[in-house]
Image (cartoon, rainbow, N blue to C red):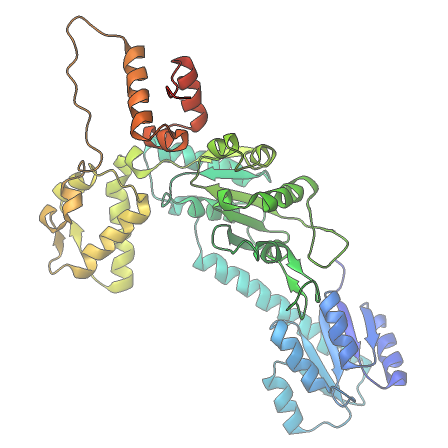
Length: 456
């Protein structure tokens, strides 16, 4: 395994040469510089495993260099070296986050021991951070609640996809748990100990999205006073989760396509693209095929993302999971807020008749609200808000009288589609959403039944 590169800073050129030789003899690659300003410039341009700096230097001393490093990197090991050692300076250096404080003259073995100790501590801190993150975000497949046939099928497919590096497109309505599935795929993959970086494509302003994703170099634009890593670089060797990928503007869709094809990114202000190693998971609650049909989403990007499509069913299509979900939510609430509440069986049956437009997120919200405001330890149907007691107020059942002599199913389908088009003013996207089908499917059926607006 290659050892980390050491940045060595000392204005004494003779000592710099000696220290460089000694550290190289210990097997490290050393980059020597004679000023703190030169060191800061290099730190903006490349990565180092550790900084070893003299304390007393003209223009910018070692303590100020340490302050500047800590402003941008809280983890970089920094060892301070001085011929003017004092308790005050040592304390100040340690308070600023120095890994060690050595006084000249210093022996080769002492430097080697200090460097090894600082690097080992940095590795331990990084490993601890990863483990803590994994514990805090423990979303393994066993933690995803659902025993219905639809849920089991999705989880089995997701489990298979965790073992391979392919791109996955997770589709489903808002609140169905798409990010939960994405985290589970990552945490069960070979990249589980590497970063999982979430990018909400709909939450980043369009004029900032490129710099947020790919980063920028100092001077790339007004206000770019230093280098900044983008989210793809931050996820290197890990996983990028592109939430609401359907919100990406067309210009960024082209750039994302390049990332998927070439596995490299273009950093703003850097003339040379560089390779990255990330797995991409994407999610959307939009009908990307319908967006493709109207030119709002690139077809080539869709097929790059949808190598392995994964459809998360809405809660209304897996109602048998609702009792288990309620029990799971109640268990979490008992731990968090200390209230032990149960739901009557009748209450659960009422909730199983509701359409749940907000899916699991809406269910979690309802259960927590009922528990928080409950004055009893048992939730009965009368405690539910009105809309849950009248679940068909918005989406009413269709009542029809079937003729005794029979009828044409094709004609009935044609009439339903025509009526839906009229209600939605012949807007195909709205009509498709109203009927719960894709726009492409609607267009096919319109052609099949020769349905078109009379004034077309």
